[in-house]
Length: 417
Image 1 (cartoon, rainbow, N blue to C red):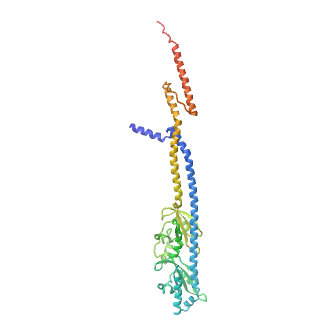
Image 2: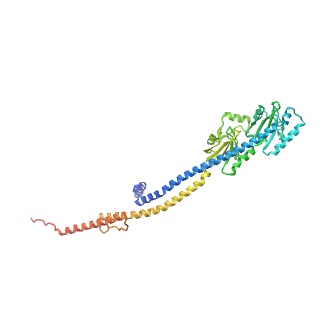
């Protein structure tokens, strides 16, 4: 019980700073006064530095997204021009208007040589008015019907059309199609020239961003479906859940060869990139990586695609955070050193005060010889010690005089009875 009472009393003194030893309070006051401004200044500078670095990284990822989107637009435009040039070649309308067996092999050979000359071209097809491939660079496509495909229907309406990424277009490969109407001299639409482009060629352009290993490129179509990502398990998944109408349209055309499009839950990124008409930047908490990330994004001109380039925030904040942690360790070590020096300095001030306290206790007990204090300094504490010694001398002198006077005056005699 006694130990518990002592421990409780010690704990109460510890929780009451007013009861702490004066040396401890003085040492802590000196250390806090010296180190607290340093720590606050460091934290303020770190915050400013992190913001400046974040702004620079946001501009960087946005520039990467803009450059990639421009390259994709140029790539798509070049292939579109090639499809248009083939559609306006007079030999192909003439073949559709009056098919001749003698002209077929030569025209097909031309398509085969054009497809072989361009590694980005997947296939070239000439479709008649019923959507049947009458000529094709790939023999597997010959005589196949594409009448149900949207790109053929658009071409037969006299409008050029470029699809998004289509899975399984040729032997299960991903690609996109450019369809151009083939017209007769009188303007009648006789069929369509369809140029298929390798999806891997688009991936090469996007993946050039990854020369910086911290960056991740992704391509999102107008429905919010990821049509390119370095991770295959994230392909053809939507940023946010799709509406029933959009999901039904995707199921109907089977562009991704699947009936269900799972959601990634990237609401922060989706809110910025879906429907974007201009480039920008966004910071968001990624559900895929479980980290805070930044992203720069830019729409692809002429298409409903948006290129996004993402980067974990921790990547560029790590050096500054490491520097700040080193600074905190330095402050802690300096705090320990200054605490020791502060205690030593505080004890030099407290020691004379303790001597005065001991001398006062001796004076209270009537021990004038032990009531004196040793004075070594000329500061305020030293002056107080000298004043105390003078007071002791005065009290000692008065005590001596009182005893002397008491010894001179005889005590009165009692009257006799």
